[in-house]
Image (cartoon, rainbow, N blue to C red; front, side, top):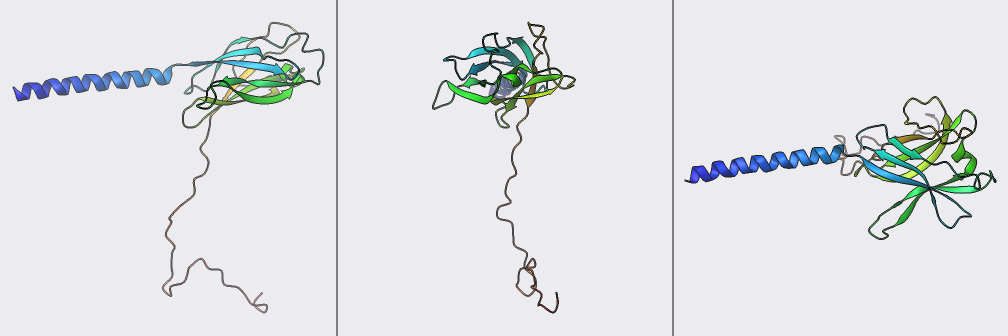
Amino acid sequence: MLSLQLSFLSVLLLFLSSIAATSATSSSTTSAQLEILYWPLTNPQPSILAHVSYNPTSPKPELMSYTPPNAADRISQHDLVRVGLYLSTPTNPKQWVGTVTSLSTLQGTGAQRPTLRLHLSPATHDIYHVSLTTAESASASTSTSTSTEDDLPALDVVLVPGELGPSPHLNRPIVVGPDGKDSDEFVEKTLFQK
């Protein structure tokens, strides 16, 4: 009777662990979607720039839709715009995260295309920052989409993986020579020895 209960428990434990492993695998392969916004400093509300789908394990995000700035915003090329997204934090459920750039950088010119960089956190693989740069149009590691207007270039999207910074070497033993002094001590030379 006891052996039957133990075998039943072991089968149940094996089944539950396989379900947990399957759900962990499927959750790591799911893609997340973001709404990237642009917000001219003179406007009271942001406008949707792009919808992006990304998988933290894949280096290429997918640009779902791209809406370039409207004609009214393109009249003044020297205006600054915010490009970013809203994140939910423990202290603020709707926190703006992004960068400020010129409208001409957002539009791109000639062979220069705007590149949207999505920065991933190293621990959680969530997007924590958005930046915008310009790059040559022949970039190999980006996801592109054609724009809705012929005079505007498409938008490139790149995932920037987060890297952990250097960690200090704490509690390293100090190597002491046979005479009890630190072996790394620098012996100062006298004026004649120099």
